Length: 435
Image (cartoon, rainbow, N blue to C red; front, side, top):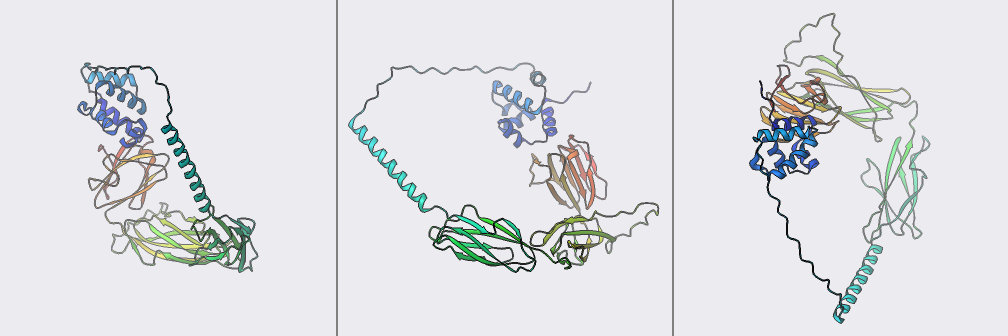
């Protein structure tokens, strides 16, 4: 008959199924991590007395969702059924004496009056300091709303508002080196004329007291939109990638600026193997060709900027960036890049739930995650590189999705199951028993 798992092995397996590390378990159970680790190792020398150990074990089993009675029975069995309880020593109770009567003396009264005077004087000083350091007020009266749209021919706008008299009003805008500055008048009113360009113009308005340096607690933001002419085509510039660039072990950054554009579409077309790479086998004529990654659609920022990473497999690619205006006008630019992976590049995406991970790079534990592993929240994406192999243990295989050297592999195991996967191309991903 094959012996079942030890109590320590049951605790480790239950914790990994739950997707937590010892640091998280310590925080949730309020039991020190060294005691939890000792329970999982079955090491009695690092544990306190039996009374405390039983309490720790009951709480930890409840936290991991195990049968507490069954856990306690196995704990007794593994220790031969002999557990010595430590005696409980009751501390002596203090003697109760007769209460003493409260008495007052002239010195006590004088000291109380002096203390009261110091408190009153300190409160007065604090009140004066608060009044002196009170931040200036700030309101924007024109425009009356935080977001407005003006005529398409507008090139300037007169901002108006109120603040504390003498306060310095600053108005900053993206792309402008120095903010507009003006001083509030004696009645607190202020106004400043700002320049407008087509599209959204964002202005951040603040106020500062020049004597105390205090700033308004609630700065204001105003967005003024100048419509584009319907017949005007968008303008497009691309800063990344540079044409002809070769990328290794990283996603291709696509960045640029598009004005008068409602959307930017990024599409990639495979051109063939990289120069010097082995020739691609002739595909089966009846097979459906690989369409490559799906096009990515972006909405430009208010200043027209856009940026996104683009995951591609090995080979030469043509990347086409197309900006489209509200009137259907388009502008396009094309960049040709080469993807040449070296070693192992693994992208791990946590999706559908949290997952605990532990990673070995070329057989050595990744120091950024640590020997106990870490729990990563859903939506997190991590990238690892190594010369020959990467091994990943996950507490939730179904929530861990892999992309190896640009090739999506997806989740390799069922949900809620801890597994370890070895990636050592050109060999396929294989499951191992490393923990």
